[in-house]
Image (cartoon, rainbow, N blue to C red; front, side, top):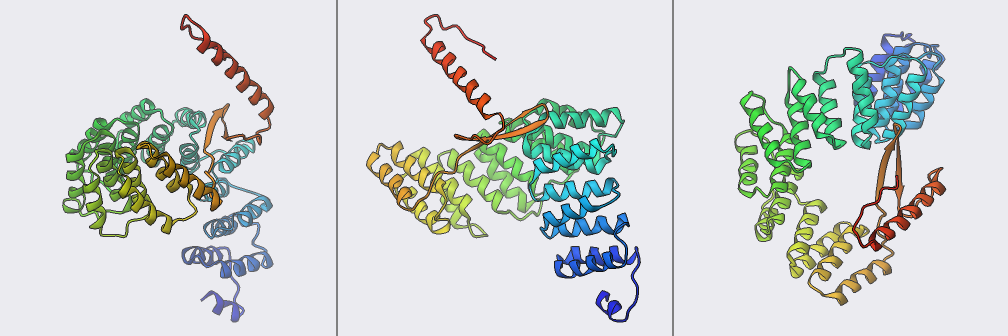
Length: 406
């Protein structure tokens, strides 16, 4: 219809353009979106916030992050929706640090965040482990008397749980006057992840008693709780109830939790039977759980078979080789373990360095092994040397006294 209107020379207005752009968003139609953008510029609608905000959303959804940011930077005026659009767009691309940077800029410009802003920022904090920033948002919510319910309350619970502050998560959860499936799911997953299996199941039963139906993510949390708590019978029951009682079809994540549960319990044969009869094709995460269980139980023959499957699925991943090498080492097959390491070297497969993050004064910094990218890396390495020196001194002390240097 838009093309037909153009062909007929009909003019579009500030109400028509957003509708066309939204259609492009729904269809992920970037080519037509760019055409609409050109017409927006040509017809002088670049000053219309409603039109330009929708353009930013289009580029963000279609993966054109730089274009979306350019549109944002070129806007002579911005409202809270403009800021929310760019923050949520960056968060969707998992550029959480950049999203928080934009939020800081928003504060510097004196733009008052709304509930959508706060939920987006809390989501970034959850993924970064930025607890201090999350606490600042919570304080802002309290000071401005924003109701801790709905999306805001759920985002707070999720943030505290994922940042490891379960006491705060439970406090917020307890203060919420109305709770939905997302509220309960956040606290269930959080409790399960932090090893509080019985607490997670308590919330699950409370949820059912309150007439709230669980969703697929809820059952991921429940099965994680069973896995971490070694609750094999309960895990079987919940997995069966999921599709039989609640009519939810198990996804790969649920099968992964069950395989992990059985593997941790030493029931590898039962785990393999489950994999053989899965209603969907097992992926690398499923076979990875089997391989990890083989290492713990010393099942070398099965580990070799699973490793072959994994190498065919993802030949360049280092984790498979390392797990197989460790499996050989666990049964003192040192020569075989060394051969696996040599195979990694021949195929130029390197272990991906782990990444740790730390939050200081609301800023999240990431570090990797031998990393010198941080602007204060020299100071950091000096402190590491001091720590090492004092730790050596601690080990050498005969009275077992403890030292604190920071």
